[in-house]
Length: 405
Image 1 (cartoon, one colour):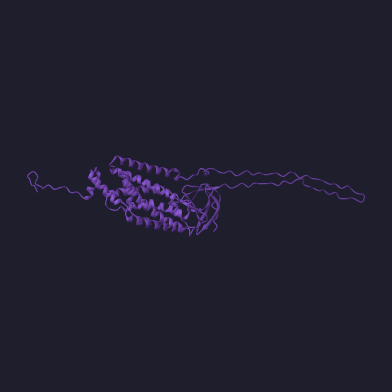
Image 2 (spheres, rainbow, N blue to C red):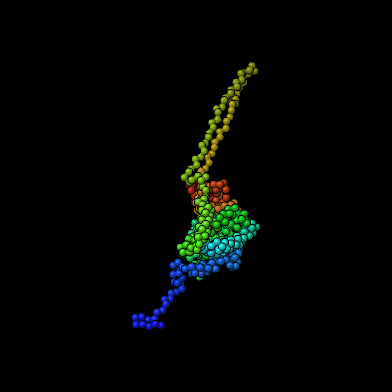
């Protein structure tokens, strides 16, 4: 220690907490050596491991069982069993830094994990054929795009990237959010393929691709804000190509028609169908023919009068048809309703999202205390939905009729 009159206190280096040093390091542009060491550490943590593939296999099996039993609890358990989505972080890191080799390695790891999850759902779908018909409402819900799911996906992607870069701890919660939005539609697509649900396959696969590309795009943007850049000009070109590909996939698969069903052929609630006019045909007048018998020498004879109709024309009256009843689908849970061939345990036909306009037919039945209504969709599909998910758009007297068990 050097003690002087001007500085009677020893000079000691300023020591900052490790967390503050880590934050300071990312607020400035690191040097080449520090940048290389940082990228090497992140790449090592993001590289797919055996645990990633093992937990992907278990996740696929549990998700498949959850779809067979139509159990939300099993689906949540499968998501919790899902592996940490660190290979996806490696994919975004390779995209923003332009590392082609690391991009292919992490992409291959994600594909293998996705195939394991897909295989579990496919086997579950094949096994479900034995017990059909089944409710399978969760399969239908998770094979469609929903705006709330997109918000959860975006939040999970941003938090996962930031947590992975800024901390050495394992980001479990953001990983679960991302797994929920990636593995549930992928498993639903596989289940639909195995069980023969045309509405779940390939819709679920398209939802998975949209979620994956959108999450990757957001992850790249977050890494760019954290000052991760390609080291070479070729890296910049590769990064631009990857970003362009993700944008094309998102815009191509998630068009406006994916979110809004076609309803152009359905009349609006304000339109009232006028009943057909009643045609009445008046019968022709009867012609009267009188036959008169003259008296004979033997005595007077009565003169009968016979009325013979010349022609009889029946009257035809056409009864006017009642005004069709229309209703819109509105379900507070799930964002839609399932159409079945029969009330209760009937075969699943298709799903209808909220605000979808359908025609309500007169038949109403009760199954296990729940009222089911016979409906017809604009494409001609007839089936049964729960009355509780209908909001009637056409005022009609004496509706709904009494339900028959």
